[in-house]
Image (cartoon, rainbow, N blue to C red; front, side):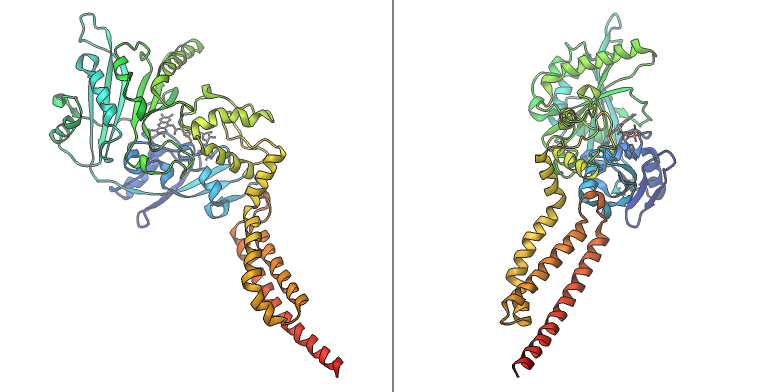
Length: 494
Ligand SMILES: Cc1cc2nc3c(=O)[nH]c(=O)nc-3n(C[C@H](O)[C@H](O)[C@H](O)COP(=O)(O)OP(=O)(O)OC[C@H]3O[C@@H](n4cnc5c(N)ncnc54)[C@H](O)[C@@H]3O)c2cc1C
């Protein structure tokens, strides 16, 4: 996708078409070139690619104000399993929904996304406050967890917990440091922001200082978990002092609330909305190369992850699809087992939306051409599922057939049929039959049969036009025929 990285920003319509090979940094840059008061809610790191990021969710500093990247995608172009290039209109709402949060890789190759830009102030306030265990970090973290998701949505405060060297003990031992890294979508003087923060935190912000962002490096290993409201009361803050697991790995809390709590959990495949306090990112950075170092750091991460179990969501323990974690399960795509294997991690990433993703996958890529270790599986190929898929594929046909037949029969046909072939019951039935036939033909043309041969809305119009033409023909033909017959009958009588 590297060569597909063009970005067309249209400030008049406050939209942009972004090719998926572009990076987030390029997107931000191109928007900023055209406007200082527009932005886009997406990830913190500029080196991240649009293709994976947008298709899997996309959260960042504007998350509490505007939600995720996927909440602002309005169109897309995808190459589907048949090699066709489809936009939203042609791919249909199901596939469009799937590739705005369910990951692109299970469904095709996304070429570009059309996004709605959001409005941002020209100047914002950013700050960073750091406190170690010796500076009351435990208490502050505890209070942060009470308020982080309830603050005004213009304020986003990330919490990073990490172990650092300290000169606050005699032997310069390590200590835990809590860094609060924040952005407020206002211009504030430092004094103002400190006073504001003191209102709700125990930070004692006398030492707070201005902060600017720099480009982050790639954490080689990440895990992400959500902390649910109910879990935040007990334990975690208190345990910081005891916790020897946060050594080299670090924990980053990204608070929810605000817009995130307002958007429905089914509006996109990303299900983690209201009721979540924060997304927790587990990360470890290391310079040493080799399998031993890798094992060491990944083991540390696993221990930390396990340690957090009582404090985070369970059944399922949620996970963010864009921080793929193969520890959650791998799908070997071995026939019948594939669905069950995929379900294990699928429900952690997508909760109840997993079911719809599987149905869409089965519909658009029934032979599972697009697959990887954690792609969405297809439904097992048994009769029950075949019937389900038939209903899903042909729901329009079935519904239209039943409803159309009823309406036509009850409402439309009698007056027409009455006029066309008054006392002739047989002929009326023929008219009814014609209407049924046309209605069904129209729907078949519109739906185009199974997904593989669906041809999109143009066919709906062609189908409708054909049906209207045929109906018109029928309407004309029957009376003409009727009159001709009547004349014939009269002649005979004479
Ligand atoms: C340094 C760093 C910082 C990050 N920060 C954030 C953050 O702040 N917020 C956040 O939400 N996430 C963040 N992430 C996670 C990031 O969103 C995911 O790693 C994302 O999958 C990256 O997408 P990519 O296209 O760069 O990666 P890739 O590895 O190229 O792709 C990831 C997956 O998406 C698929 N894919 C990529 N392009 C397409 C396409 N065009 N069509 C179909 N499928 C495609 C790939 O097949 C693969 O399965 C960060 C990751 C890193 C490494």
